[in-house]
Length: 203
Image 1 (cartoon, rainbow, N blue to C red):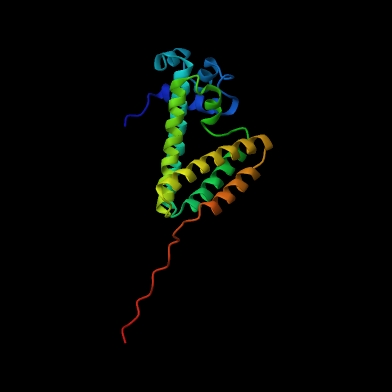
Image 2 (cartoon, rainbow, N blue to C red):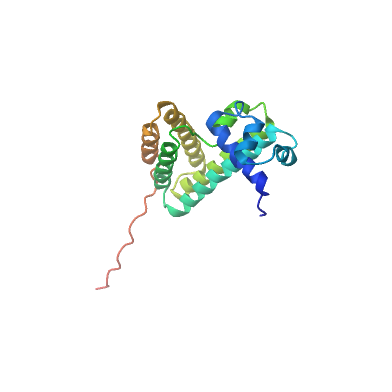
């Protein structure tokens, strides 16, 4: 997959950060250009449809990063409960590092633009879908049925989003740790892995 041109990549990165920290409406084109270190003309070169097109790209970019992180945790951990514990620790560190000024990489933008902007709404739907897909596969691996895995994956994403909002409002990591501790209990595997039986010598 070819890499994005330098200025386009910088614009998308800058927009994703600004949108999640201060909101979509409060972020102007000039501010994005300044934060990206890109000429203002390059914004219109790469995004001729304007701010909505930048918003769509930012949501896709941020959503893909989260999906990649979840995929890596899925490969590393043998249960969804362990996956979510690890992800919860990551979120606590990330939020604390930002002084609790950050939030979900895509929700701030989507709350302001969906469904008024169909392109951004579609990008958000695809992003959440990709996260749900990883969680569903992990839950099915844990022994849950397809239907139950989908329900629990949706519950997990909704809980995650709520935890980030509460953490930002309360300026505390406590909501994140409480929610992820509860999820770790709820998402225990249906079929726990048993230790291998030792072979007995025949009499």
